[in-house]
Length: 275
Image 1 (cartoon, rainbow, N blue to C red):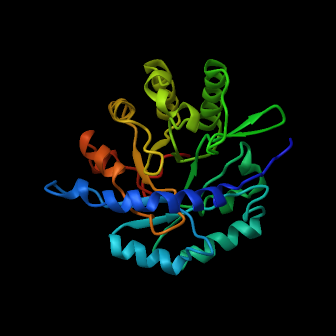
Image 2: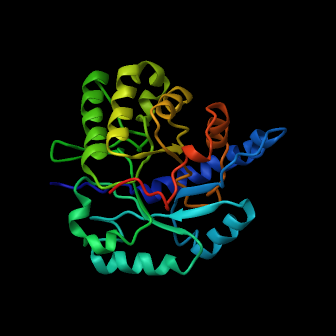
């Protein structure tokens, strides 16, 4: 299968993170004023380490914010983790720090490239549906210039891809749930019908996947979270940050309060969901 790496997620989210910093800083703290504290510890399970954001800096940010970090990296072609030796180094490197050690695969079938013994040493695996196989290549819906001509055809393809991840991939956390290409964002409520939402929730429940509440994309919405909570799903917070935005939660905390999320609703490594 042809793999068009193009602009990497790493480069894209570095730029996006810079653009979002001013907005996040302006909003930070607004949700905490005159609010009761949450009854669970804050964990950002979706933090990336980069040359411009080394682990030492990440630890300073985590301590400042009182948030524990889960460190992830992408395995597979074009990424830093391609072999068992790469994965072993990833695990050993971050085990030296007070963080959870995870992985964020992008491509379907990723796990066949790694030994089960090593994968079992991870604290969790997070995967999102933003890289969709199509016509021998990939559609990257996280790119701002991704164009969708026919919404219904796209959603049929997209739902199938979501369900493949939820039902066949060895993952604990389903990231960026209900995210859409930029060009469709304004139609979120119309596109995400109750039936589509319920289909994802049923699959996540059947296969014991936790749902990420994503800070940068501000998804899923309140209605989805309430439906998922009623179904008994667990949740995580994730910033997908490669910068000092790591652990900075505004949307996540807002949704937790609006939807009444409690400690029992949150994913924990000790209670890892998938088998």
